[in-house]
View: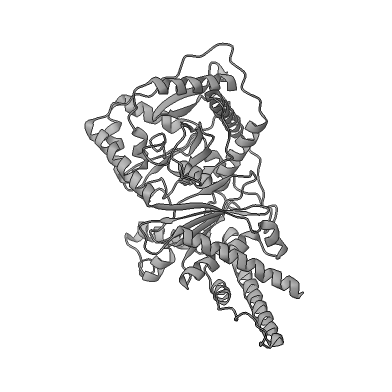
Length: 545
């Protein structure tokens, strides 16, 4: 699903994640938070090394089943490496004796500083020592000449980046730099302020997490191949960008929320008794050809960023508590709202992707809950049917009331049928009875054994079936103000993640400016109207009852 795709990682693959905004009065406070984050990641990695990660179990649908924890072991120390045709994933190693050396890489002003945070001969750095190292890097970068924007190479088409990388690693120093970045626990990107959309702090923060807001701002201060990139900005924006091939969102959310929670209750890192040698920025030996490639990568990324039509939208009419009061799963409710919103705009439904966790199975990732089905269409079409004209004094009031009640009852019946169908598809998927992974397995087996694809997989219907013009996922978080966003997966499609809170729902909606078919603001408005209409539908039932 990921490693063969040749599209650039920013927007097309890497999700961004935003955490609650902070207020930093001085540079030291930025370093404080960064040190606390890194200290918690070290705790987490040591827990993984000891094999002590608590086993999770299913909380619904055959409750108590153990869930595969493999994804959690892939986050820290992993990196995607570009290769022509198909990338590879360099995975972290685990040392049961806990003696493994660990490092993090700090990105500041487009420079990369490797910082050993755990050594075999002296153990871990304290939070205060890490904080001092971060400050060294921040101050050193401010006084240094402009760094080459090497990080932009990771935003390129994957084949182009792979070829550029082959040139870069001919130099031993460059090769060593790439090896350090690859095996680092994470990248910590320390940004300065800037690059925001006026009047929309939520959307601005997500865009900075997804792609860095462009080469004028923070995009070169990234390494998009790295599985985990933490982002802390001097203006209080805090987030993460993660490379998706290693794990699904649930593992990343757990990692991030744990670090956030522990940073909230931790005291300021204590000053170290003695300062360690200041970290040194990586030096790169770049040919003129590679320098030109970096410049082209920057121009391409800026064009892609300008083409992204993105909005973080918080619906405040109601949240998951109201949905539960309607005797409907919030996930099912929102999926049907998305189908209704799409139908309102276009008059038809399209292939829809909703990720379904397969963690009940060893090494399970996701299958696809197909939310566009005939029951959803029948309900959406009924909801979009013109309402009867408003009553006036000359109308037969009894007749009008009867008509309205019948209409509302029909809508509810069709909604409940659509909800049952949606629930059945979801349950089939998470229990291993979905269709998409099965077909994918057959397709790849045919490709390997026959050398060509059978007619099933070249048929226009199959191609339409896997062209997801609506790509969705629920990304639930326990922390207020936290959400995850990503780009649409086809040129004329929408991406839409959602985070149902108690009394609201956070949506991250994306499409592309270059498409004549899609419009993010129009979809947002249609979604708002759909959710409002659904509330009225259920409120009318309660009044009738």
